[in-house]
Image 1 (cartoon, rainbow, N blue to C red):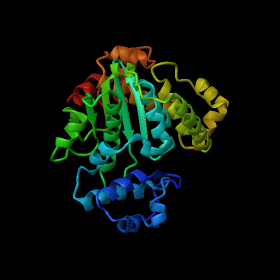
Image 2 (tube, rainbow, N blue to C red):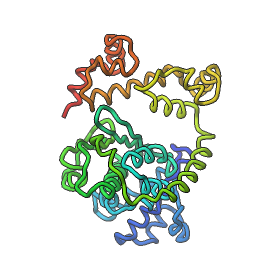
Image 3 (tube, rainbow, N blue to C red):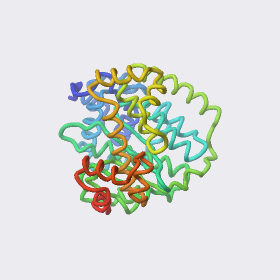
Length: 341
């Protein structure tokens, strides 16, 4: 039986109606599911039923083992439908363009769950979806990662064409023995044992329009989602809010405490005081965000080191090179060579 976790916050819950439906459809008995997650049949049939993130990760791993299907996450991802994921699904399903679909998924993902992250970025002709999972001790997270990236690809395919696949897909877990299904879904360039879970694709598809969108329904569900986000963020840490603001601005504007505190509607002094109470500083957060952006630019673009340095706000390329080497232990060019396939 899965017990409640102690390593996660009490609000870290994951809606699992889609997973229950998939496991029942594959022949697992409802009584076995109830035993595994310690719930009643009524809860099992509730479309809003959610469980702690650790319990969810154990459940999907258990399902794969019980069914003897190492590709369970991929299989569920291929058959799931956007509208199985509540408000988030309805928003994504009614985007009027691929660009809106990507932006909405980034912005509203936490309406579905705050236990995992889906971040969308663009850089010089490419787009990147970063998926961050909440790791479970003793598990490589494969089933959840496979599912999350596979369902994203399938949603995109239903909007722009069944032949589409990312140019590159990166997974943090080790290379499986059989890559047939991974390559069928994600294309030939799949990489394992990476530092991030990512879908990378050509930016040109963002211009594509989606014909079956319902703008009236979209307006209604977005209003509902905005209300949910506002309620959730009222209790959010200042560190998380600052990190999100910095990430959305890096490469576009100066990352100053004055600008960020203005966005948060607090004074600079209060910003520093709040971050100090949470065990960090504005300078540390800015450094982390810039370093992450630098790694992505080196790994996924052909921009020169000097271009990257300028874009990230360094007055001199040499200052960027020193800062990067201090954090990573290697120069930017060596990092790029090491990251190349």
